[in-house]
Image (cartoon, rainbow, N blue to C red; front, side, top):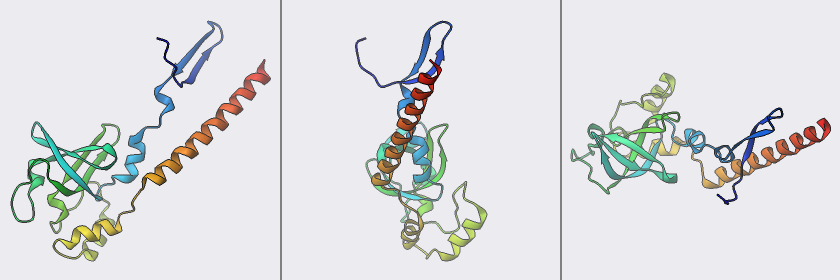
Length: 178
């Protein structure tokens, strides 16, 4: 009580003189932005931070966490990755609705393995162009379009501008209605 919050008017009930307000709608859903960053097949640096049942938790850029199964933690030399180890991880699946990112370290160096949701045409082209061994990770990283925090702030500013224009037009319509 007494806290000041920024809210959005969701609904106006003129008969009962009530407003429906929303606080969550003020902020953009970061998972929609992350869908363009963590595309299946993209490779990102991550750190193993914990265990959740049969899977391990991986801390990724932008404060996002993903999961990796034990079978996808095998390193190129045959050893298993350890907690707090920093490694490259390939995104196998990105599900914004479930807020889940499935990762694999093993797929960053294995030949012939593909991300689950990659298109068949992209797979065959990537396989032909990718060099063998450890340089495959570098080839994948070079091909992935990277988003920077600067890009995200530009999108955020554009969204704010659009919302203020929308509020101004709603305010004008309400004045005209009165």
